[in-house]
Image (cartoon, rainbow, N blue to C red; front, side, top):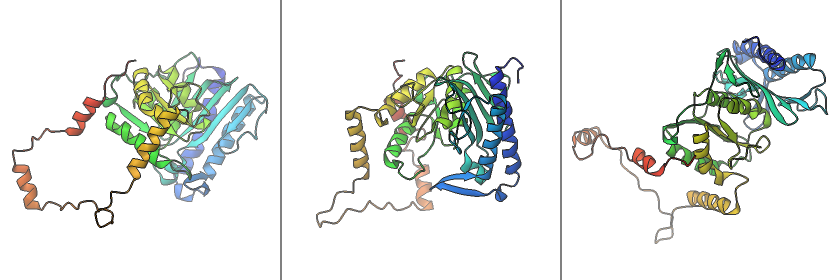
Length: 339
């Protein structure tokens, strides 16, 4: 890394690397890692806890008067009334880590009087340090990064996270996901929000949205996004989103188009939008209309074509080979946003 980094950012990078070394060592024998359950589908490992301890020790050794907000230990360490608060996720993507799926990271941010001023997201598998200091740009290792240049949502790759905790509203989310999927080139669900945001900042993906997020999931990534020229906020476009539990990010044009799609799903949406979403969910989950005899009509069973039938279909000139009704629909439904 460059030697002219802000001193606090240098300490954060040192802390992230210490945590990453623990994570990489444990990843060599992930089957031996002890795992416990915080709640359904929400795991914590001894690696999360050891990495968090290493980060906190590094930060408080350098800045004993600073506060700490960490995923596993909350605010029990550090000063309780400091204007400087380190927001830490020691292992974002724990479920991926447990399964040996190589997408997880360390996330460390410094909040000063409520504003994020330093940020590090460390991908220990690829040894990539994403970092930003307020007003100084965003970097991966020594290379400056910028958000992607695409301006039409239908050409974009969008990342997200699926609901997985008890009480998460799955049906509205599936409606929301369906809308975004029909308007973009592809949706990905890698499984670590902090690294997802780093990838948007670096232009590897064009946008990101998720609900159910905590401050330590998005604090560092939010500064990476803005320092890389992007926008980040809640689903209605408010930039003061850290405690809102919902997040959307992208370059300014794509951010605007995502907001226009996602706004009605926000917990801060107007009553009319919320009623529209409720009705759509009810319509999607309503049983099929009963038949005259009073029983529900079963969906029509379509016989699978035989091999001979498939050959006939392929040989038939009736259907043009290039027909793509989905692409046509997307092209019709996705005007350029007025941004």
